[in-house]
Length: 162
Image (cartoon, rainbow, N blue to C red; front, side, top):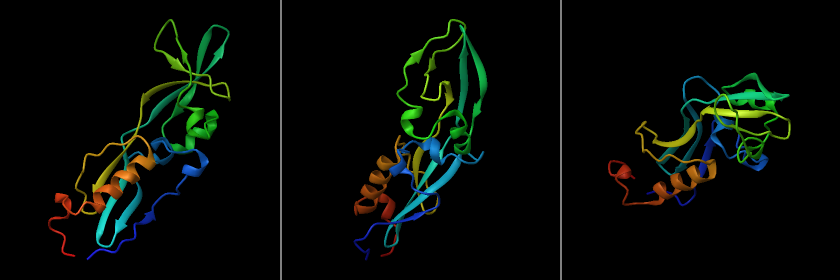
């Protein structure tokens, strides 16, 4: 029988209070599969991972030209371009370039961004079964994990002896 308490075993710090819901804050290796937290109730465990690669090219505007400043691949690179919270990157205005793609920006640090790849949250059982529950925020991923854990009729728990 499961206990009523949901618990978390964090593999990475929970940075939501710093305005960091996006998966970019939890993309830290080249494996494209980074564990964030284990959500559990008794023997039921759902793992929240960040899957996929991140590639964000940063530019500065010099006159009429956009000059490439570098590429963000991992969370450790974000602060180099004035990205400290989700809103330093997401929801920025469009900045069309005549020669290529639309950029987003500038952010408060003056950078424009071309987002080529982004990571996402996904859920797995403790045994590694992919549940295919793609989510765009950590809070949403946690809420979904808790819903699955609390659903006694979910087939995920069919073989779990409690």
